Image (cartoon, rainbow, N blue to C red; front, side, top):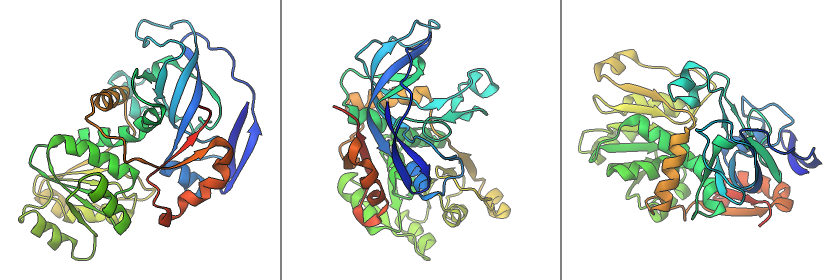
Length: 344
């Protein structure tokens, strides 16, 4: 089987790997048709991702077709059949620990993510747990490959318990920030989006109908006070993955507000404890998503509540991916989401 492997930072090659065997009980063999490219993949290519061990086959945002289904391992497995088009939930959790038992599968201590901790979907076929497949009878393969990205935003927004009419600030208008925007909009909040990129802010205004955008300069606190009639944001999502930006959120939140760190950094967050206690701030971390998030997102897309039209801005055939990939790191290319097509 042909695959694309990242041997070391900046070095993709086509390789032949062993064909995937027939599925055992509880497993399914899938044909990979679409692979979404996200920030994790870009960081892996740059050599700046803390979890990546080389060599590795990337690919965790996947739209797949079921080729063969093994015997059912238990009654809780979804009803999956050959030919089903599915989004693949790429998070491999143990199912036994306290986090998994409490439905917090995204917090499993031994969690492995396809394409991050173990080989992923930049190849023609994968053998996967059947219960990680989420099918749709109407969504396209492109849309199915977007579900994982959207799940990051959906899960983050759930953490904040948004209320209609609140001022909500999203800092960072990359793909993760945009996924937060789409699910925050479902709560009828007064949304503000901040980013240092004028191109990204223009994208928000044009494609996501965000009326209030701003660049986070030195006068950000005063600007936010003016834009919120002195209230300040009741909820802040920082999707920058930038330590300075994350530390700054504590001075931007409304009394009683919630901060959700959607981006992650390999650094220490500095909490100004006096201010943190004075306004009784709630601080949330958020990580990946869960099976229930995948199911809900698929339903919302099928019902037309989530518009996936703006997302895919760049596209490549499998054979052309190695040449195309470095161009997707160029900010001037305006990449929101690139998709790799593997077959029809």
